[in-house]
Amino acid sequence: MILVHARLKGLYYMERTPYTTGVTTVSRRGRFVVTLLALCVSFVAAVTASPARLPNRLTDLEFWTLIADLSEPGGSFRSENLLSNEARFQFVIPDLVGGIRPGGVYLGVGPEQNFTYIAAVKPAIAFIVDIRRANLDLHLMYKALFELSGDRADFVSRLFSRKRPAGLGPDSTAAEIFAAYAQVEPSEDLYQRNLREIQRQLGSRHAFALTADDVKGVEHVYGAFYEYGPAIQYSSNEGLGSAYQPTYVDLMLATDTSGRARGYLTSEAAFGYVKELEGRNLVVPIVGNFAGAKAIRAVGEYLKRRGSTVSVFYLSNVEQYLRLQRSWNTFCANVAALPLDDMSTFVRAGHGGRVARGTAMTAELGAIAAEVDNCGGR
Image 1 (cartoon, rainbow, N blue to C red):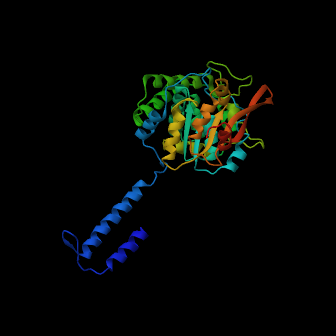
Image 2 (cartoon, rainbow, N blue to C red):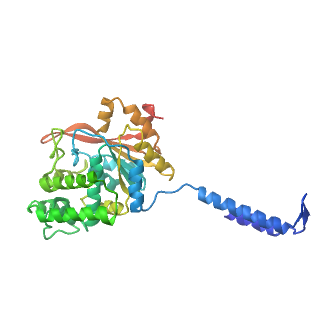
């Protein structure tokens, strides 16, 4: 704009005498007007050609359209994965938050452990990519519960269909919250009422184009949390899992290596960050195979058009299945299509560590760009 102003100022003081073209006589004032219009057009074109930025909020239509546009056909896995079985997933959080900048892009897989990582790294937007359509239904359930709940105690009440005990407030610890709920029986009436509220939140308030299978899927996963309560585990419903499977309570009371609790239900601030992001439609569940032809690459294109960079990609232990299927290099090529920098970090479920009841996977970090280079992804 400064450059345009300087040029216009120079043109204004030009000698305004007529000159002759091959066809007609044109004044310098006329040249000034023509040049002014050309500069204005150039300026507008330059502004409109600037790359878009990540939205501060997605409309309901944008959110659902993004899910449809980025997703690919769903697949299956051996377990439902209603919650994590990674007892030591918080161990890497101190190093993770120390090595990245907040406000980036988070990619993840699986259920609720993503909320703890999101609360820690504070991304501007998060994409949860999972091969199972059921994981999308699970995250839609969570989305509705975050939006409907005023605080952590309210959220736990709705998640497990138990009446809120007296005495819980913003300063209550996660241990105090779950100890209080351990004394409360589940309520069929609360379950039915909450289920109707979840369905209204998704179907009426947001007007998401849920399929009949999505409606059934949300009801199915919510029913499991009602049935098993805070003692629910990775394989409570069906499927296989590791020898040690922590309960929901175990995961919410887990800590990092220094003993500091960092779960998304540890504080109102951590819970509030995820709730705010969910309320602005910025936690986007995607159906996609890590080694598939579309989902990860489509996310990459969306982010590149908006000048954004992936800061964290949580893999869980998906890579062990990719290697067994000899598709790790395909996954690497997909990741190479993402916008990355030297700070972009993988979080994975690594080697087992001893716990009281067996072994537990321990989270590990890796530099995405370097690993992708090593496998020939770029």
